[in-house]
Length: 447
Image (cartoon, rainbow, N blue to C red; front, side, top):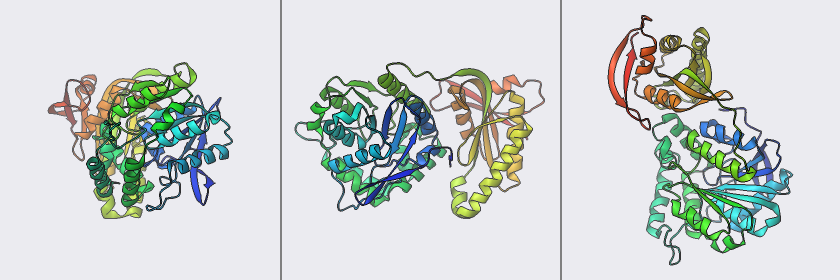
């Protein structure tokens, strides 16, 4: 759990509480809302969100909220869901509670319709509008052939009711993260925390069948940016329609297939586009580039172990694991970059120490009854504050994912750099690494 994010606050909308938080100090206000599946507290556990929101707060006073029916806000009765106009009251109440008289609105997924209506109804309260992976209407009609058929909506509603909160469903939401088990675990947990499967299905069905704010589009008179990816929930044709029917709107077609906060790379593109649109200038992000060795570790079979042990025992085991890993990082002068719930990302200025740290970590955690695997790669990384980015980070993660429990895998680059060190390796052949060009020679470190 990331404990560094701002405090969750609450404001009243009728007899319900709506959760919000504020970070950054201006010079203008930016209100962000995601919609069904959003959770302003748990989202901070995800690396993409940890990158996106501080970047937005670097040039604005960022106000984030969960609309009624999702996340930290009160649930809504499945038989009496709010109207779209009712949901605009969430925006009004949060802006009032945060002391904002005028703000830019940044809305994703089903919150886009609410933001469109609020902008049309209160043009004096909105300075600009950013619509991210959203739509003015979801279901097909004679004058809206790009929408989903009633049969497709029924099938999707059934999928939500049966798969909501699972890692399979999280993979549908964020297919670009489908090979990252930890991201899928975090995504599935967030979905479970913000709504039950039945409540989520009821909301999705209501939204899909009743959403239609097309008449409000000509009334949007503020600068508008439409960001849209080609994803399974909101195909890119919806974004093109918005851009064509909002006067002066700018459309940016995003890479990737994620509908929400999927990967750091996707969120960097979003942050860049939003900063340029709202400030008129590219955001200046302090970036340095270094050559470093990146180590990824994770506990093999952690989900199954957690289920077998129960929450309390598993928490104690994770604490012991974290202490053991940090002790080895201290011994071998590694720098902790991030944690992934059941693993670590670390960097080293020497590949030999990184390899020895990986083996020592595996040995130390084995004594705790835990099987850890590790992946290492040396390459050029971007340094952004305390974080690392770039292809080298992804290669290390992909290498680690191929290791078996109790093994440390390294790339051929690392092996070449430690020739003569006395460290021995086993050739594990050439592999394709998802999302990484070419084939890669991998080696297992001998114990």
